[in-house]
Amino acid sequence: MTRTIDFAIDSPVDVDRIHWAFSQEDYWRARMKTFGGMGKLKSLDVDPDGSVAVTLFHDLHPEGLPKALAKFFPRNWQVVQEETWAPQADGSVRGEVGVVTHGAPGSGRGIALLTPADPGARLSCTATVDFKVPLVGGKIEGMIGRLMVPQFSVILRYTAKWITQNS
Image (tube, rainbow, N blue to C red; front, side, top):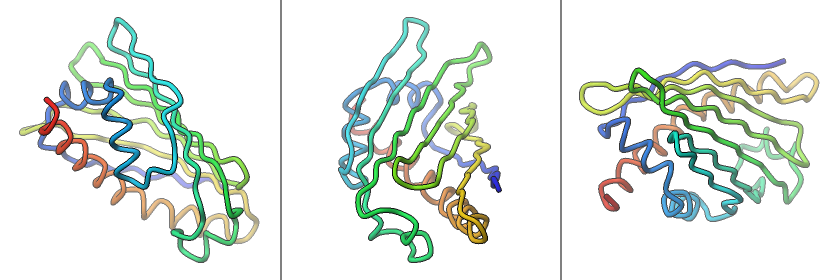
């Protein structure tokens, strides 16, 4: 069973500055270090049209997960996260995020839209979480969905702080 989560989060930073941060290698390296440092930036490509494509590898451990979720993951497992962020003609930035786990039965995808808001920007997202475990998969998807909004809020606050310190 797949779980869909819709949410929106506001940021005091405008769309262009968030998009600029996403195009900076230093941003991704600092973000990964701040949030555990258990992965690496595999690639970052910025096209002349402003589109950004990033691939991150995360080496994770289940110790920090809720017990109901941790038992389905091996001691060491890898998550590949791919993101693209493309400017749109209306001043927004469209994002696509994909997360695939290796060694565990879960994955996720999301479509995001960064739009101007007063003040700053709004990130609106529709994400799907798929955890293929009979009987408990739906509960785990729900748990991941409940964790998603606070995690994205923290990342947007971090991004705003990084922009302030680096622009």
